[in-house]
Length: 271
Ligand SMILES: NC(=O)c1ccc[n+]([C@@H]2O[C@H](COP(=O)([O-])OP(=O)(O)OC[C@H]3O[C@@H](n4cnc5c(N)ncnc54)[C@H](OP(=O)(O)O)[C@@H]3O)[C@@H](O)[C@H]2O)c1
Image (cartoon, rainbow, N blue to C red):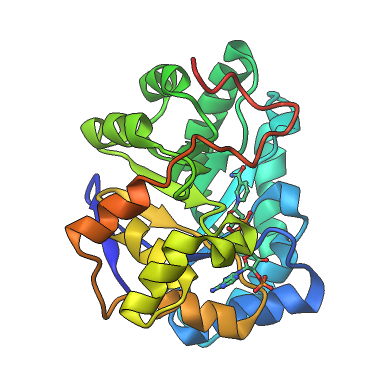
């Protein structure tokens, strides 16, 4: 498994996203993913599957210290009363003493974010998480967040149709990394003509081309979701080939600033 070194921490660059994988399917997917060689698993309070993710980690012979586990705190829990108990509840469900990375899932008002960042830091000081970060934060929000907590990552939507160049520049300058969610466009990468041509050229799948493109960028990790074991194996099998600089630029040129994850609580992305 390839790793990023950020702030002296080793972060696996390819992980398994678990949104919408539930029940026994989730436990089996996590356990099997670890057996396949995945070392980063992404969950969230919002996904309602922390217990199953934890059971999957337990079911795998992979030792806990070799798993990098991320979970995320729901915005509804950004209150003094709820935040820490909600993280304790996540740990109870996971049946673990700590997670590796704890994120604020979506930003709220500046005031609520500030409180949540203080509480995030408190969770780190209590040993509930090794590292802290945010998700779906804009650059303006990151500037502020960094003053309050040692943020290491921003998890955002990133794929060939949505450029994150400004965000990547900012994160790089501030020694943080970007975790790309929705990297496979929920599977829609298979219908893109350019990606299909590149896949044919390299005798790979479109998914492998996109994930390889992400892996060849500095400070980028990605968490494709795959309930199917075949998809998981396919997505992991990307460390034995390389895209040329021309191939990389061809994929960058697919950008159309198209965002697919736009819930009503999204921030103003341009600020
Ligand atoms: N922080 C946030 O706000 C946020 C928002 C969205 C997502 N996320 C995280 O990011 C993860 C990934 O994003 P996502 O689930 O939205 O979308 P995604 O990873 O882009 O796409 C997942 C879909 O692609 C399919 N797929 C997987 N590998 C494939 C392959 N090699 N070829 C063709 N299709 C393939 C999967 O099918 P099967 O499942 O049938 O294998 C699934 O339908 C989530 O699971 C979650 O952990 C975070």
